Length: 541
Ligand code: FAD
Ligand code: SIN
Image 1 (cartoon, rainbow, N blue to C red):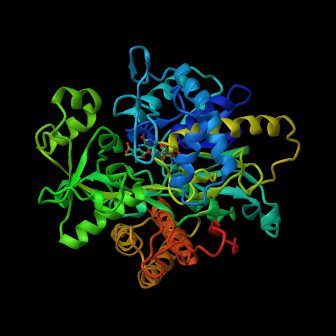
Image 2 (image 1 turned 90 degrees about the vertical axis):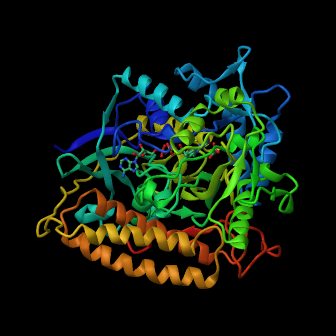
Image 3 (image 1 turned 180 degrees about the vertical axis):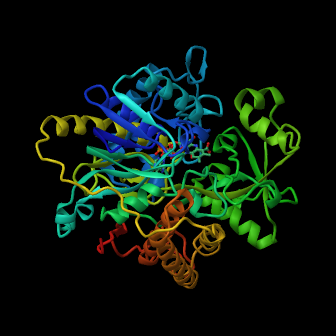
């Protein structure tokens, strides 16, 4: 059942759904997603979407806040595009049916760390869920989009899949779709397309503690890497300062940590050590509202200094009504753990949250492979630099998703070349996995190694250790992959290993501390040379 389409979109978070909707105005789209449509990082987003809406706010201020957070590594042109086109995309989302919270008829604007103004458009504390709902409803009404759930993209189709084109150089490579696993049938199919859009989201599952759901196994980064596309800034992993602290018995190894939104600190939440003392003033004059890298490192330092497992976030000085009005989802979830946040402090710890780097794309979301676009978290558009400003991610997904759709429109119109013959998936000689424990164990090991050695604070020694461990797991996994009939867990492990490799390699290349990358061996930014991106490409493909 090989499928053919003009445009294949991989992923059903905000980036995939929004881009698919725009593209379907002029051509046919197949959208695949590995679980059900709504399961995505987007669905868990709480705080909201940053944009200049208030008349007292200005584009210049939002640009400045983004550049300051990005610690000298943002692409100024990309930031300008993000900020200037942001309001139009917010109104597009409203047009598509998103119900953002309003006050006296106007959009209610919240404040988060690193923002100089109130500019976070939100739907109480479940913004992502509301956006997903609206986009999925719109897609249902669209005859040009075919959505196929439970379908996991394995690898992109490029010259290296077509028998007679294997010698094509990396600089002149095309993408013509993907091999995909139909998870419910355990069967691999081929989808060929003139254009492919990777919108596969983040990689938080590379780490032991993460706010990201189980789908965030970095598949898009890994597929792009294996196909020879250029990636950048993979060392900049954002650790959210405040995820709910729970004990191991409350979750298995890929259950996400529940996020306590930054908006809680924007609303007046105070961080305290377990003896009840405030500590943020020691680290930054902006205290709880300093950018995330600073707050996460401050918490990490307090935990190490005191030997504690969590700090507290205190919102008890607000009334219960106020808390319920703003944070119904957080209130309800904490209650499940016996914490009434109007009376009790909330135990919190940092957790891996967001990848600032990714597949290098230009201002129209074009990757280094012809016909391959990428949107959303999986990309490096240049807007986040070394540290993302809160709530700029959902915005990036819609701004650059829209731009991708404009460019794809032109490309489809003038598309003349033939898609070459690409062989069907061949798994002859492979056997069904009978020792799944090998995969579970390696997955846990990757997550533990990355948490222990490639976390908030790094060093040359830790990175070297991580590199050796991950290389061993890579060899074992590749060996198993070649012998085994594929299934989801082995594909995801392979992708986690590839992402771990890219993060470690990029971290080793950066001989300074900057933004989210902090290393004991080079504790300051390199003031002598112009800051540059860390670029990485697999040249053995
Ligand atoms: P996702 O929403 O993650 O969607 C990726 C999609 O790709 C999913 O449908 C997934 O199933 C699919 N997929 C992945 N791999 C494959 C594959 N191999 N084959 C097929 N399908 C695949 N950002 C903000 O700006 N504001 C916030 O308030 C905010 N809050 C957040 C709260 C939490 C708890 C988390 C985890 C993140 C938050 N973020 C926030 C970040 C933001 O939500 C994400 O960066 C953003 O949603 C990413 O959107 P996306 O469309 O790129 O990816
Ligand atoms: C949050 O609500 O704290 C998350 C916001 C973000 O990741 O941008």
